[in-house]
Length: 103
Image 1 (cartoon, rainbow, N blue to C red):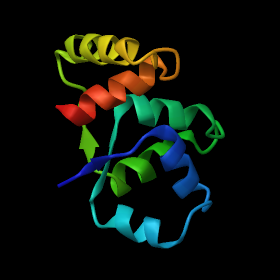
Image 2: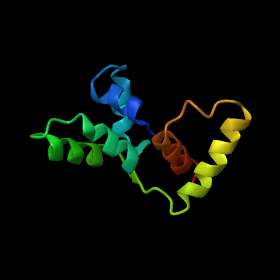
Image 3: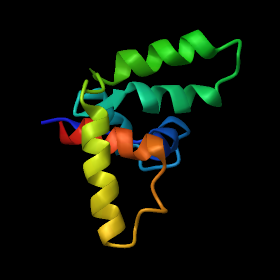
Image 4: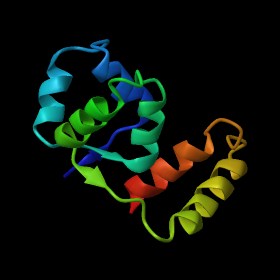
């Protein structure tokens, strides 16, 4: 089983802001990354290190593709959140990542 990481968790692991054991877990291939998370993560990368950071993330984390029908799942998530008055919290990227994890 793989778990799909979000940008805030990846950033915390990347910047050593969590227990060192998380790097080991990530190195075991249990935590995956998808394009929206990779893209958000690289926004803060130094331009001179951009490709190196991208390569390290891709080498460390299995890569999951965003499903073709992602917007159908996002629609379901949005409506479920609205029913619970929780639709203002998650960003579009958060919902795409959640949809990818569900699929």
